[in-house]
Length: 181
Image (cartoon, rainbow, N blue to C red):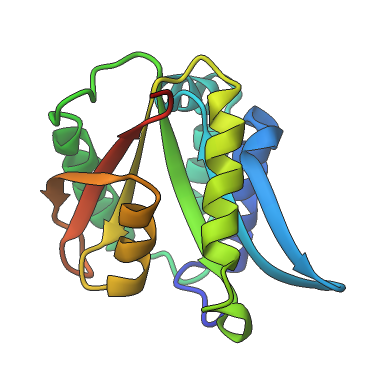
């Protein structure tokens, strides 16, 4: 929705790899025949990375980038991506991050025309309900610290801030919550 930050071919390839790994983690919200929003979650963040490596998704992304098939992702993108990976790894040093059964909300997006109608709340509830059917015990997410509406959404869903993560757009909150009480 809106102006993409990354080339659409790269986004498509990433989402295809994620969907192949855990299709039940993709939950879509439709309003008639319009896609109003989606949430993407994985029940085990460590298994996701291993699967993306094993299935060749990351190698394919790198190969396509090297062949310049992702227009707009120049050489500056590689150090930026490495920096983000480092920051993400450092954020793993938060309480519970070493839990081998930690789930992760990877992305949630609600189209601008459908915001403030409860769609984000409902997608979050459905995602948590799905994750409760898996062995995951804890779920984690990152959210832009400057975006008060999503932060409040997650707080109301029971997430608590456990650390902050630097990003190119500013600090992100790392939030977690238990799936089973």
